[in-house]
Length: 187
Image (cartoon, rainbow, N blue to C red; front, side, top):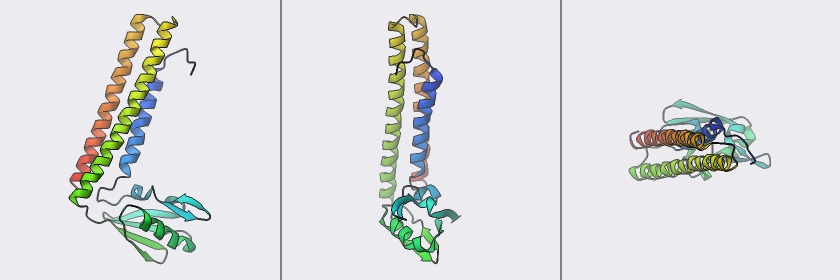
């Protein structure tokens, strides 16, 4: 990357990308409540390829602890059912015609703890991604100073801005993790 200018907005956008990825990953963790995002990781063997479940069916939440999967093609019902059963979500599909119903069982204390550990792992990956963005930004500032494109005072001021953005991103990650942990443990 042969950048000749420093863009704090770009650094913040990249940090926000890590936070958005974390939000998505946390959204796929099961908390005992029904959520269509719970089935996002499931791939169905359909039409000769692995397709996301939302490309062969509509997932809805008719009740807080029930998911309804409306399969569009009658011939795909078995494939969708098998994909759900083979996933590690521990769900037992009940099929009625082209509709598959999934009761979300109560979670055990052990399962809750395991999910909290997974949430912590996701949060740490996001923190590491934010720190990498910070490092890239600081490296660029050092290079610009060395090349004479930036004065020492300006470099220091920009470094402080990068650190401030990093601190804000880490705080947001910690808040997301705390909220998810509370949601998992107190459903």
